[in-house]
Length: 115
Image 1: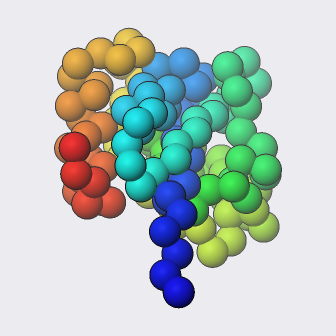
Image 2: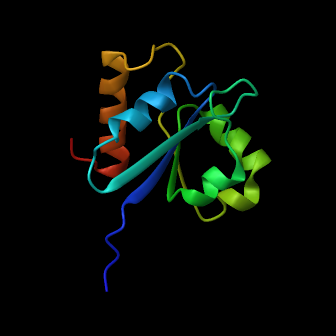
């Protein structure tokens, strides 16, 4: 029997205030996906844990340094997970139109998401 449960996406940036939170919001009512977000830095709005990684089907980071951090800090929790890097720099405000456009473009490229 096919599994029709939503794909679980975890978005990671540094502070979980602008990029990853914007990405999470883009999926608020998107059928077929559930999204959460977290940050790697001590002062992040929500700091990433092994539990977040365990929940996710796909982990999506904004910069290579975030992927490096996850591999170093949570190797067991990351094992077997799809890890994507979007290459989006930390220069956009929360829900900025250009950030939303970049996220949609890169997520369509990596996941085939239809908007």
